[in-house]
Amino acid sequence: MSLIPSLSIKIYTADSIAAQLKEWGDPKVVFTNGCFDILHLGHIDYLQRSAQLGDKLVVGLNTDASIKKLKGKNRPIQDQNSRLNILAALNCVDAVVLFNEDTPLELIKVVKPNILVKGADYQINQIVGAKEVKENGGEVKIISFLEGYSTSNIINKIKNG
Image (tube, rainbow, N blue to C red; front, side, top):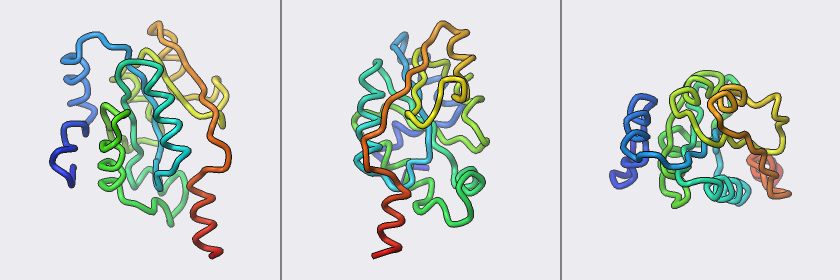
């Protein structure tokens, strides 16, 4: 999966993240997920602030196939291996796990995070896994976005010159 061997230590499957969580012991685990197609300043701000909520940040990353279902045939712009390696290269990210389902619910059930984070475009009752995290004694946090930064804005800027 990793194109850059030194980053492979941060790239996991659903099975291997479970083993890694046991090896880490008992840190406060933060989980978030997304496509992270064209990484921009808004993503960096969001991931940094998510990481500050706990000891370990685990990022669920949509596969190329799941992004096509969500966003259409022209997405993702960058393939999943590129996106995996880019996220793994960030100091604030401790683990990246691909998921192919429509939602990260099964991955959330494996990770059992102490804190589940999503962006401010969601209400708590819309966040997949919120119920399960709360039932396990965890919390759900919503982080506001850095105004003016989005993958769609970048794509439109490129299209429109």
